[in-house]
Amino acid sequence: MNRPPLPAPMISAGRTAIRRYGTATAGLRPPPDFLLIGAKRGGSTSLYYTLLDHPAIMKLFPAARLLPKANDTKGVHYFDSSYERGTAWYRSHFPSAAARRRARARAGGDVAVGEGSPYYLFHPLAAERAGRDVPDARILLILRDPVERAFSHYRERRRGHAEDLVTFEDALAAEEERLAGERERIMAETGYTSYAHEQQSYRAQGEYAPHLRRWLEHFPRERVHVLVAEEFYADPQTAVNEIATFLGLLRAPLSPAARKVWNAAPSQELKPATRRRLAAHYAPFNADLEALLGRTLPWT
Image 1 (cartoon, one colour):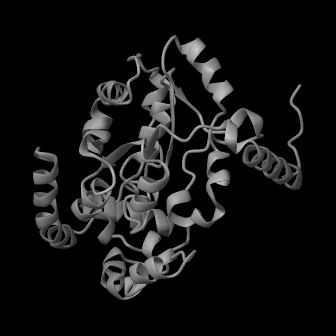
Image 2 (tube, rainbow, N blue to C red; image 1 turned 180 degrees about the vertical axis):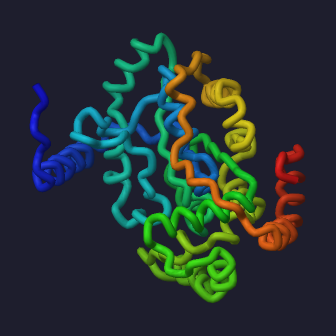
Image 3 (cartoon, one colour; image 1 turned 90 degrees about the vertical axis):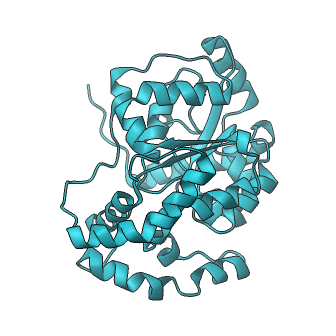
């Protein structure tokens, strides 16, 4: 027999109680093994939930089974917009050492847990904060054709009724004014968060090379693994095998359900002239990224 859904206030109270418990036991909760730092609308959600299909990748705390109608948590957004909450709050999102021991016994080897917050790549302070607070973490990054990423980001905002400008071209034209001074204010004012910097930076977030270089200032290159979204979608098993090796885990076959594409947007045609302008804008950034990674990229 189906049980009636719990009232929203009861669910909210349950979430609060679980988070308080997690915070109170933060000292028993090891820090993350990896951070999936982006890019936003670059495939990070699909990659994260594909990783959760691996038997040695643990879910964050609490798992969805503890909360009715909840999805497993993906991103904590600690190093970008919640840093003032403190390390105990951050640690509250990770499994306890005892839970890790049980998971290792089930998996027959090492396990790993991490979070995926796609704003980390672009946020001007996230890399420094992570390098200071979780210096042993490994860094995962998935990148998509920056032209497609920018357009997808805009469409996501429009679908959520969070973008008033009715054309992508208008949003691109407004971006410089919207972002003026926001990066500097984030860096100067403790606790300041900027909607424009996170959500209306359609073009800027695809300028990948300088954002990645900022992370490489705080994490050695051998602890940073960069994937290409187009290659991941074409062959998710190979991508997850590479990540398992990177994290020191045994390889495992993925289930068919793990191949789901999350956050897919309805297909819309990008105007050819806009595509050409964006491609020209990104050309030097793409060249810099290819030099940084030592490989060619499918979108160049």
